[in-house]
Length: 473
Image (tube, rainbow, N blue to C red; front, side, top):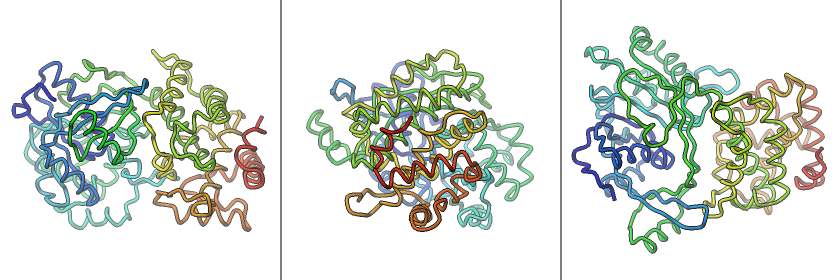
């Protein structure tokens, strides 16, 4: 249990998106500060933005914001600690005004976000802000009753400016390369339409540090809740399960004060880009590789998949041959050791990370995790077969979804378009899947890529993914 007095903690951070990852990562780091250093100015107010978040809000309110972080150690043991750093909760659909006022409160120095890749509302093909999206249009018409993060941030920043308050730091903690830059670009694109007079003030008063976050946090299961009760005697309706590994690399670029997270393991650097690229291309790209191909091989979890010798070798070769050569030097990182740790983490049999979670929203993930690697290799005439095989396997994954033996659940906002393209590619236009421009961009215009892809997708359809990987050279 927290040894500190939660009643004495002052709220200095508003966090939007109080899902499992935030509670296993940023809230964990902050809890460590409170626990070890008696720093009480950085309590967190958690904000749930979506109607679908009501369940978690109600669960945490019943527990006074406390929840258990269950760490599945590599040796099979389970450790647990109760996290107390999230001291307030607001449910935005229930009371938008309360959220706006909390964000505009002078005591708030940082607003952090975990809103998923899709929450930034940009077109994956063009990178442009999607101003015509219905919720964005609502925020433009009803600015005092917003629905999106952009509406909330715009109105909160406007109130701070109008009240003569200092700016603050807006810090993305999502798994997107250059996440701070993207947040700034998308927010300013919205503000140019909603409140154009606010732009200059934001440029002078608000900072957007990039950061790289990492901790595998699988979805909670009923058995986890029962295990917590049996092992520790703790009744918790909303615990979080995670691996022992955690990492946070942050650009030290804050508008005002910040917590000394470096005291509990965070790394502050001048440029986070090399670390982001390493993690996104190796760990996240590797996750997608295993999730998609493992599903075709009818596995259920990441550890099952990576412990398949063929796929373990394929993953390591993809990392070594196609990803590592384009990463360059990364200060303070031994790349071989990092890749070893990634495979070791994937193989943790106590995590049981479901492939359905890994494959969810692949239309938003692959344009960031995998496709840039293929494009960079195409530009220099490098190897692309392994990366291209992952995309061919994804086409087959979408094509087979829901058929006999392939009853995995596809969770993707673009699933209808993806399924249609995959089936059309099998039935008439072999490039139909690749022509989904919002996902693949202009890849279909590369003859070398297309020729490679067609050979691989034909092989997967005729002989299966195992045979195709085995024949790859």
